[in-house]
Structure formats: structure tokens, C-alpha cells
Length: 486
Image (cartoon, rainbow, N blue to C red; front, side, top):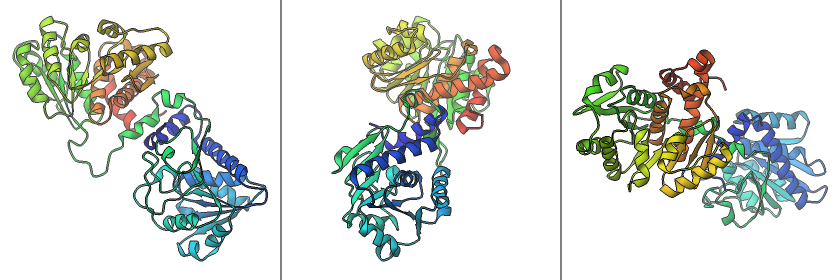
């Protein structure tokens, strides 16, 4: 099944794979027409009630496949307010081909005018008003159109989802369309099995890769509200450093460029000044000494308490005393934590209330007790099995990154061999932390891998295999805001 919030993501990813949304609309309209042909006899009157979005566009396409029927199309609203280019193009195609089209400007036309008469006389009515676009109650003239459709004697065929039905829950608003048949696309919507209608799932040519591989459509989840305030997009704490200075600084910079509002670094006092020198926007906090020790766990937990996500491990090192501190910190933690680098090896032995998103490369995965394979399609199953075993989310880095929590698995294909340079994993950890503050583990891990890989691909155009990890953070923000070319 597929939730409504994933539909636009998959459509956009399919487009990135070379399958235009207009082609998907053509397939959708054809599928609806095939259902009408099953329900109607040649010459029957078919009335299409269409909204101004892509659901209406599907209805416009449907009309062109019903040449043996008496078809009328009613657009709810003015044609100049059609909301998408592909829907507008299909409306214009109907007009140019002189189909029987009408624009309904107010609800009176649906009760007393030609639209109302057509609905009453129709043998089949196609509900192409809202689909998955329901938000709150029905507005006019959609509300009246739904009432008139429900009062009609014709067979009602809804496009994707009956107007007024929540596709995720099956809940309905007042006067939702009561459909006889529903033609939904690509996959079943969770709410549709609960409605009293026959539901057909139509294959419209979206490849499985549009869901499996992370793509530009996934970036849609990162849209920001216009009235957002400081802190709404995450306050991040990076804990690490000691043997390595640049690692926590790179993670912090990357988190800022990935959209975090505030980023703190907690590190040994011996490296605080150096970390701070990387960027003035990094807020630093010092732990006594030159490495992270068990005696610091209380301070670490206290500072982590009110943070939206902790990035734990960059530059911490493999000293056994520091790993003991890692065990204690993770055991007593809750909330969202990205675990990177050397502390990864202690994760399987730790019981924690925290949601961990672990970012090992394949060697680190083996050290954790997981298995790997050169074939990514085999590796994804191995990663999913190990994620389920440890009950945490994994982002396993490689030529194809595998992201899984054991229930859901995504694959990322961005990135290049130049990214084997030291520090790119620290950038990835920071981006992951910024996103894990806002979205679920698999979504955050998949997006972070995609964004960081694309940043590396952009940098490689100039520097090839000479790219440096410090080149990536500034490009990360360009990828997220869509300023670089596909």
C-alpha cells in the first residue's frame, strides 16, 4: 500500500527516471476509461466532473478514450485557474478537438443548470474532482457536485480516490462521493479497502525503482512552512573529537547546511578552539582533557536532553576508554541519535531507549556483526535482516547505499569514487543528523545519502577525484533547495 504523502514523491522520482508525469496521466486516464467501458454500453451518456488539479487532468484524458459514448466534461471553476500545466494542456486538447466541455462557475449550475441536468441523465458519472487532495470539508462548488452525484441514478466511477474520502484512513467528510467503482493508481491506498466500492488498482507504468531508489521527489518532505520560527528545524548536538579534530567540525558544518537551526559541538577542551575556528556558527562546549571518558557521560547526557538529534562519534577514536563512555552514553540515552565511526561497534551490545540511525561503511558493518555482499540487491536483504536483528535503522555506505530499519528499505545511487576521501562520512553524519531531527530514520538516512552523494557529484565535476570533504557542505544546501541541475 502507499500513503497519499508518498504519491507526489514517487511521481517525481519516476519523472527523474525518464517517465514524464504527463505520460503517467495518459496511462491513468486510459485505465479509468477501460473501467467505464466495462460498465457502460456504446452510446451511453458519460459525464465527467473534474477539478482543477491533476485528478481533473486524469478525467480530461479519460474523455479522449471514450469515442463510442456521449461524453460531456464539466470543469469546476474557470479554465485559467487549472493548477497544473499537464492538466491545463489536457483541457486545452479537449477544447481544440471540440469535445463537449463546460466551465461551472457556481453551484447553482449544478443544481438547476446544464451541469445538474447532465448529472441526472448520465448513465456513468466520473468523479475526477479531488482524488488524494482532500483537506478538510468540501468547498463549493465541489460540495454541491458531490451531493448531485450521490442523488443521481448513474454508475459512479471515482478517479484514484472518491472525492471527500481520506485515502489514508478511509474516513469521509460530509457529502463525500459514494462511488460504485474506484480506479486507483500504482498501488492500493490504505483507506480504500474500508469503503463500500469495488476498487481496481491500475498499473500506470511507474517502475518499482521510483520507490526503491531515493530520488529528487524525496526532497519534497523538506519543504518549510512560511511562518516557521527559530528551532523549528532542529537543534543538533555533535559529540566527538579528541584524536581527530576535523571530523566533528565537518559534521557540524554539514548539519547547518542541511537546514538545522542550531548546531552544538561537545568535544574535549584540547580541540575546542580548533573546532570553533572552522565556522563561527558552531556553538562549542568543552569536556575536560583530550579525549571523551566515562566521567564525561553525565555532562553529555545533560547537554543532549533538549536536543532534537545527537550526532555521536565523529572523531571520537577507538580508545577502549572512549568506547566505554560510548556504551554508557547510548545505554542511558533516548531521543534520536545518529551513531557514526568507532562507536558503531558497541551498538549491538547496548540496550537503549534511543532511536539510533547508524551510518557504517561495509567494514564497520562487519565489525558490528552484520553481513555484506558485492551485489547491492543481495546486500539490501542482508542489511534489512541485521537492522531488524538490532532493532535500529542502518545507513550502510557503499557504491549503492542501503538504508533500512528492517521493515522499510531504500537504496541510494548518488556519489562517486572521489568520495572515498577522508571526511565525507563525517559530512554524511551531519546531514543525517539535521534530517533525523525532522523526519523518520529511513527517510532521513535515504535523503542524507542522496543529498551528500549529489553534492559529491557536483563537486566532482570541477575537482574530479581531487575533491575534499570540506567542499561538500556548501553544495549540500544547493541540492536541498534545488539550485543545482538534475
